[in-house]
Image 1 (tube, rainbow, N blue to C red):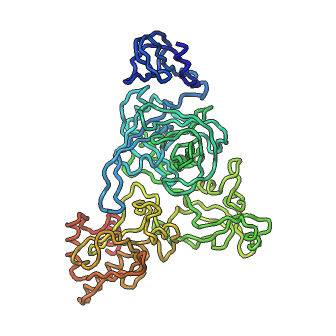
Image 2: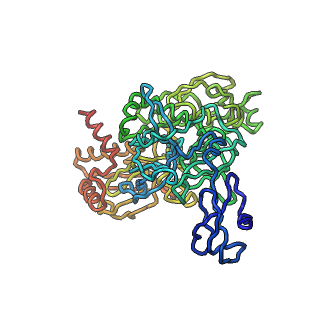
Image 3: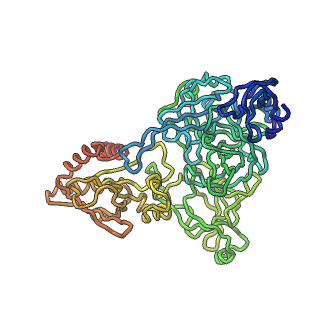
Length: 597
């Protein structure tokens, strides 16, 4: 027995004992959790590369008791962590009227308690947004090695894709009654480097809840791969693998949730760099959910949430900026002992996503942002937040969309105190689109789409058409152009005879019959107006599309005569909806018709 145990690596928190157990095929040692026993059995055991037959001890690994786990971490967090089963179907961004095949994925989540409406409390599952993105059917299950393996139906109550956070409502609330919810650490409690933490969840390879342990190695602003947006994140060296996403990162001393695991860095020479959404961002998400749900929270505690979940956004500063690290650049601006960041470009569409006009931007190109919401910025954009030095983007994300925040800028040799309204982020090339349908419009076999990051993901970043990649990286949102509209494919028909069919290089539309195109809705309006004009005159008319390809400008022309018949043929042959457009623009047309009436 002593010799057999000597071959075992030391494992902290475990006891070793001997027992009788059937070996695995090939004579490999079998490990089980058990009580302490000792006996021997005739088996084949590999030790030191040789094979022995006869009565030898089989060593079993005995887990430390739950009492010892509780004493070291306050409580066993595995009780309140569930496995999430997502049956999802993603839209076809390159063929926008079709869906991709149905697929399944798994993730993790923590049961927490939410106070919603009239002080009522309900239990929900906190997870990562990418775990439940594009879902068709959700289920949750507790750890099968300790509880029943029954799965329970769940729905999305709220989601914020930019912060990669989501809340799930479990339909059978009785299934959560015996669970003691985990608590989220207070907003002001941000872990320090060297703090010991545990990642709890269900990585691939089993249905039992898994725990890995490590320390916080960084606390800084990182890019969130799900939304392509920078935000505050914890970096830990505890293993985070596929399936851990959405699971809690808990304080080893208190078992409070200090983060939600959401990604890890995968690259040659990189190991043990997992990231988690920190508690301040989680608390900000939960607080906004509680406010926006309001009275609906009363019903939510007793019934499934509505089909459309609450979708939250994070605020954007609405501009591009650069650091002022070079001393010569600071001197040229006459800052003296002041510090801040230089506003290099202001983004504005002139109206919000809801169609409301926006006032002139508070900040201007060439301004130096000195303070944001009371936080003084240094030349790299860092400020003091939660007792440490982090990029001011962390302070920005603690605000809400529509909030007016005080700022100080250096403009034309003067220091100005202003109020700046924070809007949701908007881009010329959309990104981070989930749980939505792609938008498209078809005319004479030409399929038009707004360019998006999801469309570009059909190529690796090094193989993307350069004119599209340039728009993605450098495109600028202005009132004159709020979307980059492209021809994603040509569906062959006699109306477009003479042009190539299929993918034709994704040319970007510049103008239709001489009118500069602002966005997809504007393109549809221009086409409709040109068709109405042609019908009124009865003369032979055409639609001339001036586009920009990788090789330069190009023109495509469609005859307006017989266009209805051509559209009907194309829809029938290629399986498009009879309206020749996605439901977004069908609804817009109906709303416009009602307004006119």
